[in-house]
Length: 243
Image (cartoon, rainbow, N blue to C red; front, side):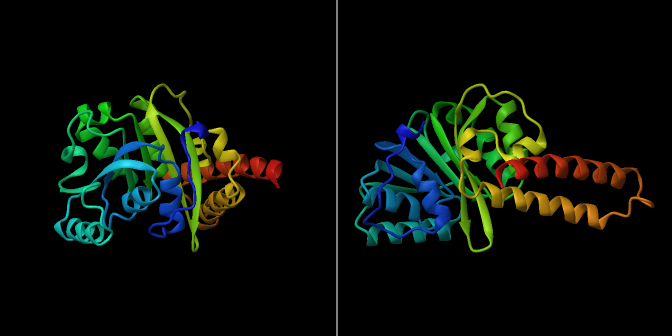
């Protein structure tokens, strides 16, 4: 899988760690769509670096779409990046691009974008997804709907850890919610931020356990407590192996 990617230090726009990690997963020589492009930073950087041939930058809102046009024009890339205003994948025709970047949105919104334009989504060979939340829910939906997570990388920006996925169409064996949170590919376990990711998940479980008085808990909170306890045991075992 890594052979697809040919990231090199660019000469163009400097990206944040999160967006740089997104850009690193884009296969060379592609035509791409950047959905929810905002300032069009990712396609501008990729074109400047000679990584992609052409891009369509889409945004549902007029303001971000206009900002994208201004940035693209300023960089002299109006013939290489076209801006389209519209919702999700609806701005595209079938087989118009090789892949699509959908970054900086909630996991449920990314899911809905993939669901709403099924035929277009089916014609796109790969997706780079960067959910801001509900990541495990997105993982499980992808597995249940004919998508395969090929690679996962983590990016750190300030105090935040972000998960970026390279996804294709294909079969993926089912996994549990905690497995989805930990990661489902070998690349996750090799990530330099993996231990930090595990500690973050572990701390979340400890906060749940601390916040529930099991002696007086109702049925719902008792189940929540037991799940957090089970998850924490799994996380601690993996942490022990990697520390």
